[in-house]
Length: 337
Ligand code: TRP
Image (cartoon, rainbow, N blue to C red; front, side, top):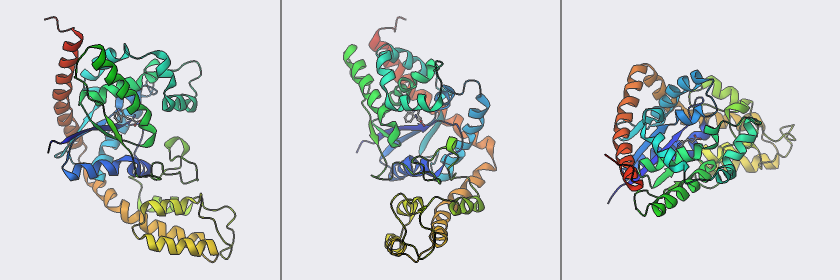
């Protein structure tokens, strides 16, 4: 069987949280361990710079944190290529050629970019690099001829735009050089873990995250502060399960689903206090995060080794990306000498 090829990655703008873990990291590790995929995981520092150009320290510092998070969840540099976007020059040249095939209007219609532009309050000063980052993302994916892109639900528009660029390129230059990728998304209903405060999204800017690197105490404190049913005041009151973040997390993380069903029934009938449910969730989360935290602490003891790992991964990635760039140049006809 020929292996499928995966290209995926994350912007290093902070540490990764359990929303990332559920949304895509878990999928990637599963794919890696199945042995059926050739896996490339990229830390997208250039994409992170598109709205952090004046704050490069943040990206620099986050790079190593994300690398540690990857190693902690079980991405293994002996099985997967882990590399850094800015160290792969071919990606930029591919981006330039692809930009000529994409209209400004199409870029302005990308729903995820649109939502981010609103959220980031750029006003009249949207960095042009930010607006075009889906095209650079198409370069990331196609440079590796990836057919499989495991990402969170919010990345669906990027995959769609990549597919359009692939079709347009192959058609325009009458070649079969680029490969149309498919997204692999989290299981239904698990695409987006809500924040601790009940907000639909766990995100650093909202300060409602549990990080993979959080200490045992931090995890416990955060769980105890979680949003539940605001009308569930006394233990004997019947409580709501819907929109109750603690139960949403239990649905995602608890291995023993029948135990969760028992708790749900008790909670709805009245007689089960929030503190008890939160203690149970805390146990469940600590069991999942404990081994990850431990591995992270081990890898963090030797940061130079982490950079060496990224360097070796980037060297491997350059060989593949340069090969695709050669084919692209030839397809366009800019291979003069
Ligand atoms: N856009 C992704 C994020 O927001 C990061 C990313 C960059 C990526 N290039 C990619 C993801 C290519 C998958 C494939 O974190």
